[in-house]
Amino acid sequence: MGMTWRTAWRGLAFGILMLASAGFVAGGLMRGGFGVGSLAFIVLGAVGLAAFGGGFVAAVGGPLARRPVLELTNEGARRPARWPLPRSRDRVLPWTDVTALAALRRGVTGTKRGEQDYLVFLGTDALVELARTAERPALIAFTLADVPATTPGMPEATRWCFGVEPGWDTTLPVLVKEIRRRRTVPVVDRRTR
Image 1 (tube, rainbow, N blue to C red):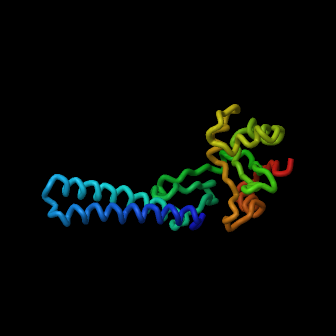
Image 2: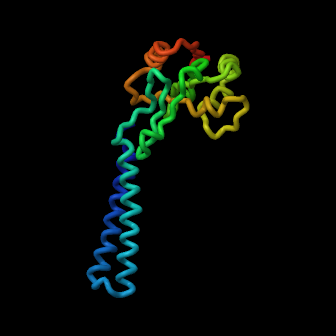
Image 3: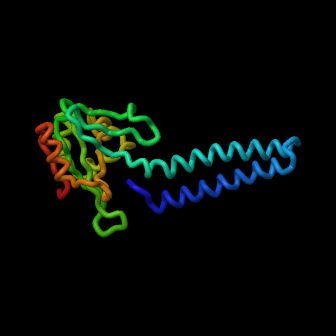
C-alpha cells in the first residue's frame, strides 16, 4: 500500500501524543517523583508512552512493512496476514478448492473514488452461476464482508475477494494469466455488464 497522507498524519498525531506523555513523565520526575501527584504523572505518562507508542508503530509500521496482498504459489492462493501478525497466520486457499474466478467492477465513473476492479476466487458451482447471471447489486455483495450471505459459500468467496488497487505491481489480466498457469479455471468477467 505504501505511505499515504493519512498514514503520515496519523503517525504525526501519535508522535505528538508520545511527546506529551514524555512531558508527563518528565513533570513527575522534576518534582522528585515521591509524592502522590508525581507518581500519578509518572504512571499516566508511562501508560501514554506505551499506548501511543504502540499506536505509532501500528500506524506507520504497517505501510512500511510492505507485505503483499496476494501471493500465488503451487499449493494455492495465499493471503498474507496483516502486519504485525506473524506469517504463520497467513491463509491459504488450495487450488483444488477454486472452481472459477470472477472479475467484478464496483463504483461509479467520474466520482472521487471512481471505479475499482475486484478478483474473487469462487469455490462452488452455485457461486459461479450467481457470478454469471446476477444483477450488479448482487455481484457487489461478493466484495462486502458485512453483507449477509444469501448463497452457500458466499462468506468464503468474500474472504477471497481482492480489490485491485492502483498501487499493485500487476494488472488484473496478468494476474489471471498467472493463476491459469497454476490451475486452469474459467473466468467470469462481469466488469462491463
